Length: 463
Image 1 (cartoon, rainbow, N blue to C red):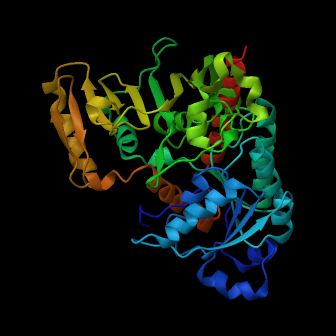
Image 2: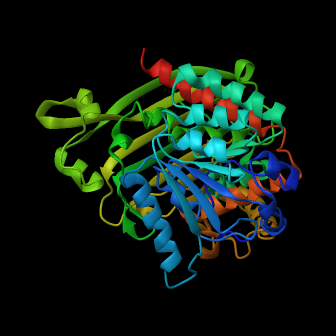
């Protein structure tokens, strides 16, 4: 399927008409289901990811989307984004939004069930409960990260996975970063011992794999300044950074270091250290990104000297997965320097070479993959040449050039589709799982292990 297609968090679908009736459909829709077996239900779309799910149309997805949300600016912003996609000059979409506004929006969605795919991308404080209740009703769920932000709710998420299994539905989250081309190539090269050697075990001070993500509150999305809801700055509703963006990073550690390996969070994971620290936001900065002239009452407990809002958006966790030490960290700044954007840094330490992704000023803020050998470059170059030749069967035009420390992997621009396009790639994979009626054996236990790391890391950082 095309990588330009985009979806985001979905509670998904069984292709059969029988499940359609179970999800509250009617006879008039049965014929439509034959051609477009997916109908979306979007629940409280408070995060911009909820709109990105509809940036493009999909053959399997009905044009009619059912939105259930409390009345207010968040749903207005969401609908405005969809209208922008519908009216853009190039590749306009044709979504038909059926909207219910009211404080009982979630109960209304469960009682009506006009669709068979629930999208949930918004306030994270309630997300675990929404997920649990949805799967309990036999609804498939693809949820925006994070699925859980509190250690107290982690058992509820584990139970939700058990219920989903018993109901025969699929619960999944959107891990877009698996589809970033430099990350995919880093993983592929790490599986080539003639280039990488073997993954180091690492230590607490010098982990075998390190991943760091830098984000910004003020940014552009789909060509427009992003307006954030005020609750995004409330860690009780959004979650601290250590349980939010780190979800992606922990996922990549598992996916790259132990591909297709089933992980048991009670046996294979050991927390080593964790810490957290705040980002300071002044009133003018807050107003710029929220369009609110003052901090809401629920943010007042986080307001310190000179009306500065402290947001615990930054965190770091060091943990062991099996024998491998890994470190993940997330940093939130208010705004990127001119020309910069959100960035990702990653290093996998091999016995023969390190595989490093950098995205700083020297790289023009474009993610760039390097191979940096421990020994003489000349000795490793033939093996890298052969590896790139084999990878070129998938990535046409792949090459490498010399650098002072090793080589830079040159990736054709056609594979650098951008963050927004990765949602379509995740959805394509999820639709494949739905059609098959199952996911790979490692997906669910590794999702549980991932959220164990983030929630236990949060608990450890607060001690």
